[in-house]
Length: 213
Image 1 (cartoon, rainbow, N blue to C red):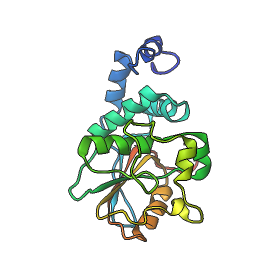
Image 2 (cartoon, helix red, strand yellow):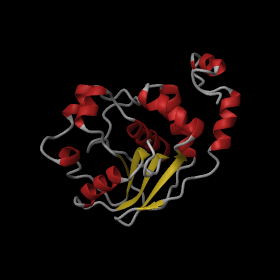
Image 3 (cartoon, rainbow, N blue to C red):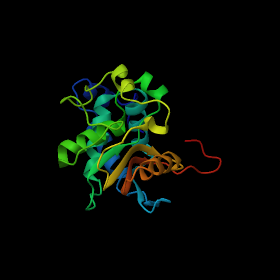
Image 4 (cartoon, rainbow, N blue to C red):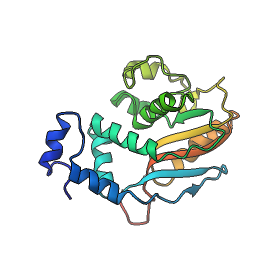
């Protein structure tokens, strides 16, 4: 495995804003040629993973999500959007909202950023915690206290989304294992009259018995 702390080229490239060296980039594309199979959801919509949670892609995801590497996060989002299925009838991007405890620890999540980028690319609006982004600059719209201020108390997922037109929703997440989080969030949106077209996760990591993700 070339990528990561052992690859000096990647380390040097990251200091200039380029996340991967050519050899690691080639390895990434070679290992991610195959799409994970879509999963059926109980709400009747498909759950699609863009990358398998394996190999170099898994290493990149770990550094992007857990160590806050912005250039690698942007790399994954950009590559993921190139693989995104765009069915007709999508009117809104909604990222799965992180819980309140996680909001205290960080600002925008990977699904938030993906929704924001997709809005700018497609013109289809996104909603973050029940409302549109407030500022113009990606990832810098709200600080942690600002995110928390948008969460209403007393209801699952913040009790938001009261008056948004949700006739064609795509739910976005960064990682799906059992699918329970997406299913729970979908049930919440369906109870508020949403029509869910699909759910899309950057990574699909099916949880197998005896396997640690």
